[in-house]
Image (cartoon, rainbow, N blue to C red):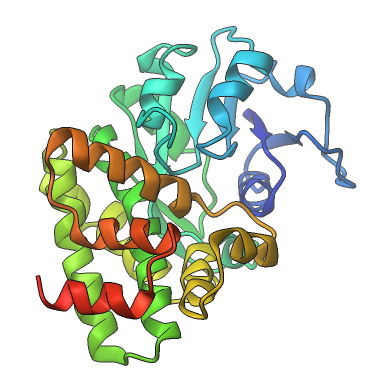
Amino acid sequence: MTKVGVIGAGKWGEALSFAMGEKNDVIITSRTPRQMSNFRPLCEVLERPYLIVTVPAQQVAQWLKEHFVYSGQKVLVAAKGIEASSGRFLNEIYSEYVPEENLAFLSGPSFASEVLRKLPTALVVNSRSPQTADAFASLFPGFIRTYTSDDVIGAEVAGAYKNVIAIAAGICEGLGLGHNAAASLIARGLVEMERFGRAYGAREESFLGLSGAGDLFLTASSPMSRNYRVGLGLAEGKSKEAVCAAIGEVSEGIGTAYALHEIALSRGIYLPIAGEVYAILEGKSPRQSLKDLIER
């Protein structure tokens, strides 16, 4: 059995530990000790040859600097987002600590609660090393169909951007705008996502497949999504601080919306939906944002 270590024991880390445990010897760790039979100290988990890291995008740079020790491990990044303070993608952050050929990034539609129930899904392991992608893909259980890709930036853009569109979709639902509006928003969100990714050299196929459309359709259509719930709260007129406090979990779409705003300004990329999400997070009326979007 392959020895796998999971770093981060939140819902997604727990789900990945459970899924990987079907075929592998898995241990898990997190900043806060958990009552889990396979919970171990970080130093023990870091000794595993295969690591799956779920540390959120806005925290991972500091975590790597303070806690990570590289000793030849292959690392699968299972978080999604863009660092708000710098605009860096996760591959840029991790590559300072792990060689590119040992890095992989997980993408695709995956609610943790459904993985814990062994409900089927399909995911993509993205790596510039085919060997690393294949190695991680082989670790997944039978109820998760895995594909591989070398379009790391496409997977990163899709995984980060869909959370921002999910916030917009939650706002749409919270305002009671109907299914027509929601479908229109998600479709235009996919186009916007692809346009942003193309500016970074991402391939169109990544946005039309599991990493893009698949994950977007899931996250932007269900209150099981934290980012969708952020949108519902914003539609009620709550501040982002009040919404986050009520949810009690990290919502990566918020930090990513701020990162996209800065990138759009600096690179001159037209991102109308992401721009309005940023404006709403900064206090703009959701209904005024809707009006401005329609009149563009």
